[in-house]
Image (cartoon, rainbow, N blue to C red):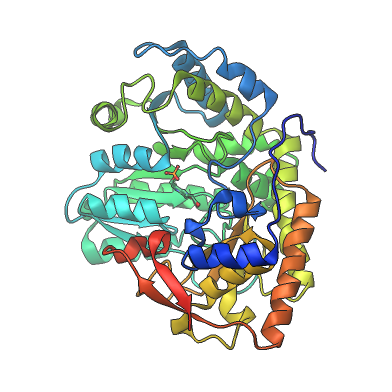
Length: 450
Ligand code: F0G
């Protein structure tokens, strides 16, 4: 049940079929090219698309816009200390800014960096600094309904160290929840094991904490040791093992923009902190604003506290689970158990007639728009060429934004797509124009029906 009500609303409109067809064609069958005005339920991402509370909006009015020594920065520092247990932070305009600041200071040419699974921007920043990002998810993670399918395979990290040498591994990363692996949570037991392996390798242990509150909720619900604990206590416990955090505030910071790096207040990390601070000033902005306005710092300070409130996070994760159930009940092949921020649909199973080289995931994304002006995102062979990832479509729920009727609309849209599929009316797609960088093609490529 939602423990809030709406006070400010944004009108949305369901365009008629003719308009949807025309929009899709104009967008080159790529939903990144759609105007948001033509989208009825927008599940493209949960990043920066949520709804702020009245307390956040009120705090924004007291934003201190001083270039240096902003009071708003102090308030963010206090919130990070209370909620996440870190005393030193370097603000950044969003998560990838924070990644650039930290990984540029931490990794060198020829290094290897293991992670449970790298998110695209993480992978790109590690690679951009000359290091090799290595995914170490648990084998068959999604096959047997594991409660913590997002865990890091620590033995795979040990094997990597045997192969390349521990001195080549400057950091062990852990992304909670595991966005690239269907938003699956990571147990505190696994966090401790990752800490241990980082110690063995004399590597820094970094947590990508952008969905830390959702992860803490799953831990409380599923890990026996934490039964009956508060989400806020688990949130601090899981982060207490890390040397540094990378945070995109656009997720569990409950803001539309912002992020930061946090570094443990221990003299062992003084040099790293100094290097990262310098990079922060160079790429993001002075140490007390880092690419955010003072009011943005205020909104995130409040948002972090709200993100670990029981009534908020239970409703949030519960809504994602409900969408998963609605689709599963209609026979849509969704990854189970449902993750924390999104439902992942296996498009190759849902549209078995469409061959892999005709982008079944992208075809499904286009059909969801055509039938119901619902926007999801393809995370299969269109977004990740030359990998053998499953043909997934992600439906991410923005925080505190949509209601049960919107979820029903998404489920009904799937029913309509299934009807068209059964009538043999859905075709695959081919690319007609794409940018030079293959890794970024899903943002701008244009396609057409085969
Ligand atoms: N790390 C993870 C695990 C993420 O999911 C994201 C963003 C980032 C880092 C980068 O943060 O967007 O603030 O620069 N994920 C969004 C998504 C874009 O749709 O999953 P950012």
